[in-house]
Length: 239
Image (tube, rainbow, N blue to C red):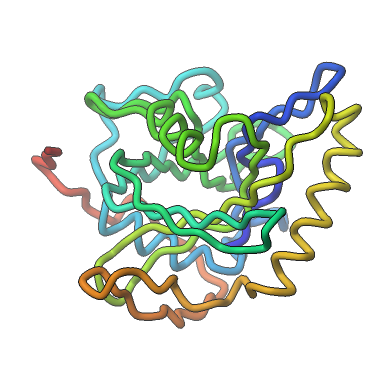
């Protein structure tokens, strides 16, 4: 599932305020029911079902939580990031040692009441894990002086159940980006380069033999998800 450039980004300061990450992707946009029609959403929901945990006092949303009804929470312990380097045009793969917490929430704001959003907020905390530590690890793997931003999220449904996040690493600008518009134009050119070389429908990455994965070909269909009828993993424990 593709993610917008503004969903997740780091080291990308502007000369003026604004342009902060949204930390989310809307899964449906058409009123009145906001059916989940985002391409690739079914794959991510499938992964969340297999990694679902109970929404209770172990979970802390952080700022902005009052805008959503929290419907599905998942903690992914197997996360691989794919990083496209905009300078050398190569795609690199890194296994993360820390988990990522994902949430599907239903908006309660008057303008988008009922719309479901996949959230990846850095302030999410579950038990002793938090997304801030995860993003700090990713930032270190990519290089914490380089701007980088989100491109896609995928789930391996066939074998090891890994979550894949694709990020694009931008060259270091001489100064801060003058505006969000200019930054967006620069990043869009990198996205075009990436798409020309590595399709978003590419196979999952070639990793060492003992970790090799199969390619997912799960098709996305229009559907409504009744989250309340799913059960969570009771007694879920983390190492």
